[in-house]
Image (cartoon, rainbow, N blue to C red; front, side, top):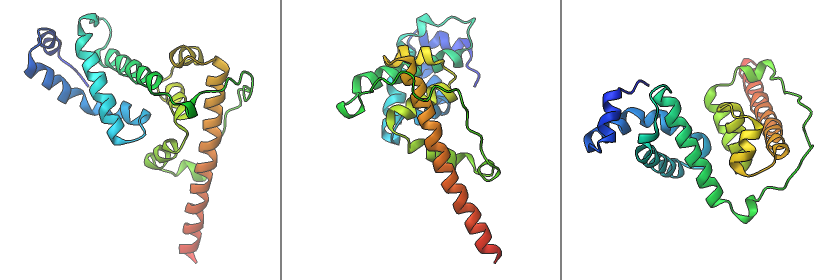
Length: 191
């Protein structure tokens, strides 16, 4: 995604056509981020609209030395985290687990899982509990450190690590089940 500096300047001057053009050009980029964190398409739309409004209202803080897409992504993720903090429910309160699953062990995928497509993996991520999904996406997909995640979500670093490891274990279980089903159906069709 390459946003023209003239378009940004026009948006700073509050030109509606320029703002709409920026929205059109950045929609798919921003929506992909929102879908990773949302529980539904409706929630993703809401997050996108909130994030885009923050992008427009904070456009004067953008510094051209930073790629615009990187800046927009950061504003959007911060908006998503703010919304998460506002909407956290009693059932989603995080229990602080300091040293559990902090072994640094990563999980390897077997050959059958490597044959899964991206959509199957995305569907498995969607099945994770809400908080674990957010922490997993922040750490694995968006590359934030456990310290940054802890600061953003107001949790401890140990809890962030626990959620990532929990998510990895759950994903491995889900992907193994899918893989077993694929192997079974391939074996059945060859009979």
